[in-house]
Structures are given as structure tokens and as C-alpha cells.
Figure 1 (spheres, protein in one colour):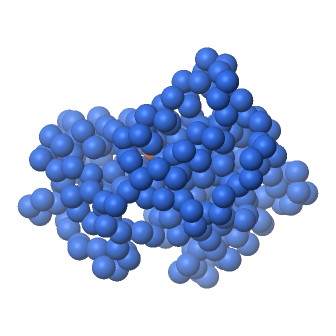
Figure 2 (tube, rainbow, N blue to C red):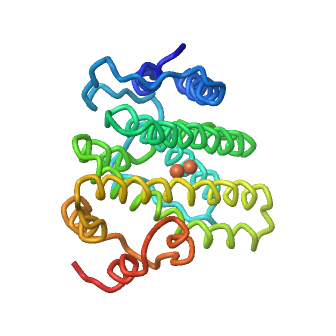
Length: 267
Ligand SMILES: [Fe+2]
Ligand SMILES: [Fe+2]
């Protein structure tokens, strides 16, 4: 029987994209067939040993070339940036389950499912990019996403607040508008792809909310106050910017009070 943390290490420390994708699917398959053990015996390697492929070249967000959807090459550049978000999301899912031990089995099962879905998203977008004559890695990508993982490597509640409950939740806010733009130009392939991803992402944010509240309950913390504190502490630039997709965020486990705070409080 295979071990989930050995799979996690093999993925997080693997510079080959295709090997990492294949291992992720193998791990999920092993879980669904009852052939994966969740025993945590080996030590956790530091987050600095996580290794990314040579390409794309990673740049600071301010150094990224700006491209608009309507400009030549803009659509391909947009999907390249989405491919990168999905790629890092695979790592983020593996890393949360790898780094934070001693949680109930369901925690590991949930994040392995997320890792597998993020791999599917990445593969779908990579194929879509290829139809436009581009491959993942042909353009630079921004390095900001993994910074959230490094900042929160020792703090599970901060990781949950920053990754599913900020970064992925932002996807729920912005993706419907982007889908409308592709609908407007009759780009059905892009609409289908982004709609599929959006549906899965509601589930990822929901799992983030569920585990955030569960860990708060274990530690006798009031989850809404704790969320506000963690945002103040870890979110550079004060607080996520709206407009927020209330309907989807509520489905994904945000409360009206949290959304009121996000919308109305200036930090
Ligand atoms: Fe995704
Ligand atoms: Fe996700």
C-alpha cells in the first residue's frame, strides 16, 4: 500500500510537470480504491525544498507584461496566466496536506481531491493553450502565489485564510465576469472550460471554510474574529479588494458578516 505523504513529497520535489501530474492522479486513484495509507511517520521537509520546473520563468507581479484580453496574443497570455494559477494550486493542495499533520483523515482526503481537480484544470488549460499554438512555460509567470504558502508554512489557520479563503475565493469574484466576456465573443471552448473550473473552485473554497471553522473550534477560537485578524496580519495591502461574489462566497462558507466586513471596512 502506498503512502499519501510519500506521494506528496514526490510531487512537491519534482521538477517534471508530467511526472507530477501523473503521480497526483495515481495518488487520487489509490485513495478511491482503498490503496492509500495516511500514516504520518516520516519528517516534514522544509518548504524551501519544494521545487518548481525550470519554465515558466517566475517574475515579481510588478514585472509581468500587461496584456488585455482584446489585444493580439492577449487571450493566449490570459490562459497562460490561468494555467500558472492552476499549476501552483496543485502545489498548494499537496503542500497543505503534506505540511500540516495530525488532522482527521478527511482533511487529507479533501486536499488530495483538490490536488487532483487542480491537475485536471491545469491539463485542460494546457490543452486549450496548445490549440492556440502556445505551451505552458512559453511566457513568464508571476511568483506571488507561492509567497502565500511560504508565509503560512507554520500556521494552518493562516494558510486556510490566505489560500482557499482569499486567493481561491478571488477566483469566484472575477471568473463570472471573464466568462461573460468570452460569451460575448462566442468563444464557447473558453466558456465551457472556465465554467467547469468555477464549479470546482466553489468546492475548494468551501473545504477551506469548513476546515478553517473546524480548526478554530478545536482551538476554541471565534472563526470570524480569527479570520479578520489573520487577514490583517498576512494580507499585504490590507484586505482583499471587491467586488465580491456574495452568492458564491456564501455557498463556499463565508458568512454575511464576513462579507460585510470585507466590503465595508477600510484597513
Ligand atoms: Fe483550479
Ligand atoms: Fe482551486
